[in-house]
Image 1 (cartoon, rainbow, N blue to C red):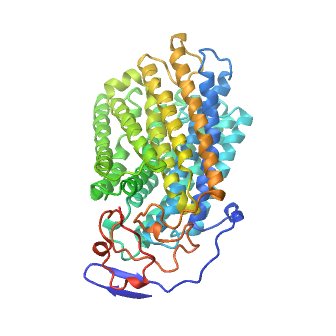
Image 2 (image 1 turned 135 degrees about the horizontal axis):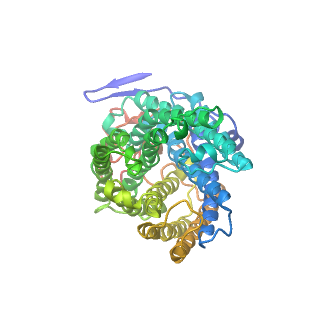
Image 3 (image 1 turned 60 degrees about the vertical axis):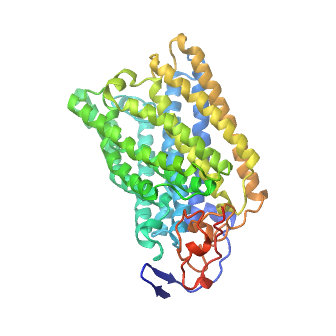
Length: 561
């Protein structure tokens, strides 16, 4: 290794490594320690569970097309509703956003050969498929039926075997999250190339860092709460049994201390994806780099102090309602900073309306609507009236489906060329976007009206006056179901038959685009040297590059806009 030092940075070069063959298809079914293989494993398994959870959602919405219980009996309805939410959160959004994109991109973005702990990384992934299998097996025992929140005493007395299996599945996913988060923190902090300053770290990595810290602080609390619930179900303890001196509100505190930060675990990586996609396809430097980076850390901090706004109807004292109303409103500020930064980046940009950009812009509208609903629910007087109504369901899905899922799609269209070496079909991508955008609004926007009119959530039978609006939501759900067809076809066909992308089809500036597509096993033959920022669009090559010996650099990236 040789080093060249000037007044601003230290440039580190490694000797060229021998070339390695690409991974074969069967390597993706093995215990592989390559972060890129693990990232794709996460994504593929997550998209499989997306189909499973989506089919459950279609069944639930079909049942709700009429006010009577005529498709699913009430127990099966409760099981489908519970496991739909569980799968979509714990086996789809979190593994795809953090495990999938995080594993594939973070080492490439910071110039590392792999994650800090490759074997631990592989173990973290292989905890997820058994967790999903356990949820499926639980249906042999009636399926968990207490909702994805699993509040006692309902979760103690209803389908105890299935509920215990559900707890085991969530414990596996939580352990995976802890192991992966530890790996991300160490990798970003200790393994970025020496020439990369902290002000040159891609915003996706800042988002993953904040997400990982949040997961490390909050996930153990959920695990503790679920272990106590498991004891109450199976071993005669009474932590949550009110008739034996237990306290059901204790469970709510333990659950929501994790599960509201879990919203940020799902959305912070998506914010990172947005911060990578928008500058590239707008051909402009990101507006407010430091503000966006630090706002991720602010969300991580403040997000730990908002959980009680889910419990305003649980006998919460007035002073606590006031405190958590204020903290909930405060956490909206760093989120607003990001949105303003993205809009300012779009303003005056040379926007290319690729499929990735369409989903990114679509996410902006979805998340703003969901965020406004969140602000209203965070204020105690309003929440007391709409708690446990469909208003909450509409808000929740605007944030998570309109936010997280749109962001995952944007990331897939953006980085699919890097993962596979081939481009996705843009015409199919536009059809996919149009169906998803229309289906999302048609499904979830009317739910706000249902909630304001008093329709309770998590019920299979409802007052006939809500029938027409529910049928509208069901039609939207069918459109969303159809929307995945062009996407899955696009991915499967393009992976083998799509147009070759080249190493950098978007002319992007972050480090992952300086290696081949798909990347080498060791990522680079020679580690890259950071000579300009990841968002320096519009800066000429001569202005951006100050490396004293550019002949040893990887092939330069075009800065042309």
